[in-house]
Image (cartoon, rainbow, N blue to C red; front, side):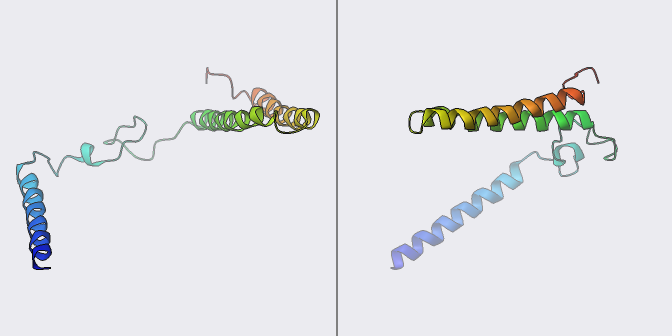
Length: 117
């Protein structure tokens, strides 16, 4: 029991010494605002934080996420063709793909697929 106590004290002591040495030896400047600021998609951290954000960029990101989830839902659907009645699975797949195509058509009507904005 005493040996366990001595080893735990020794581990705590060594780790504290190592942390203290890294703080002393590091060349990090606490006054550097750019390194301390979070990275935000290429925005300049020294400029104003109230610049307008491109809504077009945000909506394209949402479109990408929707189609990314679509791929995650289609893969199990392919596997389930073996397990379930073929015609019932075809109906489900048809309605799923119909919803995605209607969404794509809506995005096309709203000019969200136009990259020239």
